[in-house]
Amino acid sequence: MTEPTTSDAGLAHRQPLVFPSRERLGVQLPAALNAFVGREREAREIAALIRSSDLRLMTLTGPGGVGKTRLALETAREIAPEFADGVVFIDLALAAEHGQVATIVAHALGIRETSDRPIAERLGDALRDRQALLVLDNFDPVVAAAPLVARLLAGCPRLTVVATSREPLRLSAE
Image 1 (cartoon, one colour):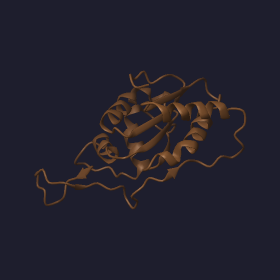
Image 2 (tube, rainbow, N blue to C red):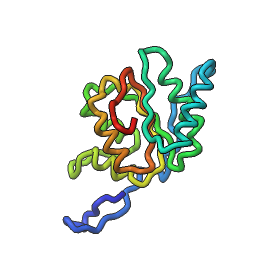
Image 3 (cartoon, one colour):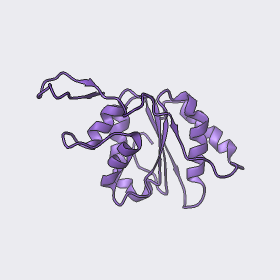
C-alpha cells in the first residue's frame, strides 16, 4: 500500500498509505435496534463457512424485507474479532449507479479521492495488506459494479466481503 510522495516526480519510490487518522478500521457496524431472534443458526452457519474455508465472498440473496441485512450484520458482529484490521458496513442504497460504488466504499474507509489515480486503484492499494471484512449492503441496484468486488478480492488476499442483494453478483468467488 503506497502513495507517491511529492518528491517522487514519477520515480518508483513510494511511502506507505495509511487510512486517515487511524491504523485499524475498527468495527463500524450500525447498532441493532432490537433483539436478533430466530436466525441465530443461520448466522452461525455463515460465520462457520467464512471461518473454515477459503471463502472470501458470500452473497446473501432473497426478496426485499426477508432480513438479509440483519443476518449479515449479526454474522459480522460474531466474526469481527477475527479480522485484525476491522469490519466496515457500507450501505449502497444511495448509489444512483454502479460507477459510484468505488467512491462510496472509499469514503466509508476514509480514503479521499484525488485526481492522480482512479479511486478503484487507490481502494485496492489501501486494502491490499489489510485483513478486513466489508459488508456491502443493498448491492442489487448496482450489481454491474460486481467486477470491482472481483478486482478487490483478486488484489487483496486477506479481504473478505459479505454482500446482500436480491440477486447473486455472479462472480466466480461467490
